[in-house]
Amino acid sequence: MSVLQWPVIRHVLHPVRSAHSAVRRGRRAMAALRALSIRRETRSQCWCGGALAPIGPPARHRASYRACVACGCYVNVRPPRPSQLARLYAFDLYWHGVQTRMGFPTIEERTQHDLADGRVDYWLDVVQRFGPGTGHAVEVGCAHGVLLAALQQRGYRCTGVEPDAQTAAWTTRHTGIPVRAGFFPAVTLEPCDLFLAFDVIEHVPDPVAFLRGARALLRPGGVTIIQTPVERHEFANPFSERPDFFDDLQHLYLFSEPSFRRLVLQAGFVLVALEDATQKLGQVAVLTATS
Image 1 (cartoon, rainbow, N blue to C red):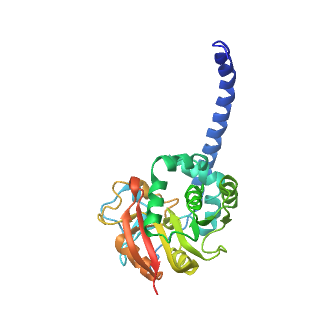
Image 2: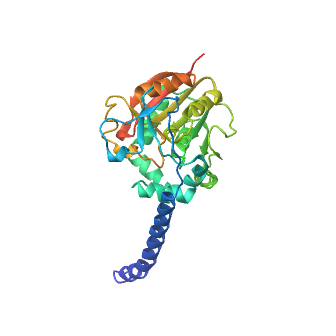
Image 3: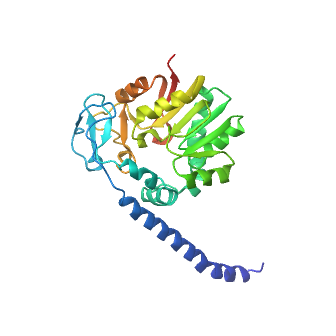
């Protein structure tokens, strides 16, 4: 190609690219507006049944949250109605509206992003340190499926779960891994040796039922690995370095360490390890079932 030809081609392609970019921006803007129309309800008590009180000094970023006086969990008192969750986590609304509104990558961009920032390597390290080493791995909230794809290369048989059917189909198409559609634990799955849920349980209306569902799915000797924000120190000023965790559209519960330990025990698990995840992503907990 001559030196003169490339600028001509680039000039021709420029308006085409601009048009595609405008379409993407418009699509994301419309999805973001739809996210704001999600209907809410009012919650007056914690998942444990405890009463709620204000969290330390008033702060705008956590105005929708209260602290449980019984277990110390941080509770979203104006969460989306349960009937709205399927709409919230629909492919376009969630991945091209909610995510971009928060400044996070779309599902199409997530694989490269998550590989580049080190989180996948960290998750694989946790699985290597605590996991069974082989068998059936189930990941709830598998999104783009990059972790399951990596585990499959290491010899695991993998199954994913996503609440939205279009998202599940997208991930299966791009990874070849079977992904079930539905809200766990109301999804039919084969027993597993490794249960994974990264950045999921804070979105769940009933975290006890979620973890009990994981326990019921595990084969003897199986391991559950959960990533979620767990405040371990500043209970009166929680997550001061990550105020964005107080996202009242998505996050129904944010845990203090005492509340998380209570949840684990109530669901029939033993807490094997609790450590800070890489990149300030929250905390990672390793659980095994009580006998």
